[in-house]
Image (cartoon, rainbow, N blue to C red; front, side):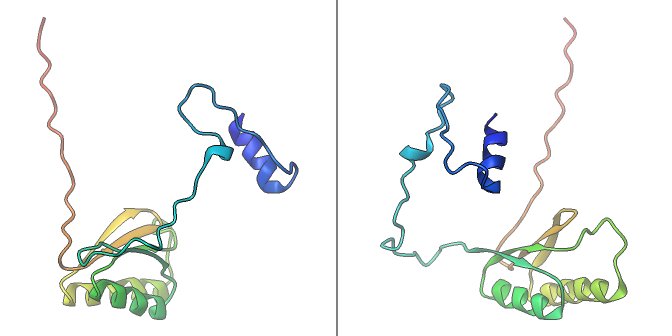
Length: 136
């Protein structure tokens, strides 16, 4: 119901759609308050995450600049599961090699996103131990 209402609203078919609170704890649109964050001072240890597109070497260089400055970059890539042309593969290899040179890491998140991490960021995969089934 809400999804269909959102689609109509985004398509411009309805000027205003009211969302009801069905005891789900979600506030209605009218109760939404935007917080002013311009007055908040940034601390020195603030972690920045940038979202950038990776299409060519220029994009790769921009990503490298942000990573060298300590930012985590989420790079939107082409679908990595499909066949990629040689030019795009060279861009990925260039980004990987240069990231390793500065001590960073690249982690594939999904088919079309990678994380490019600076040297001071460690990413670990949490592994859960399987619980042994106890006979009753």
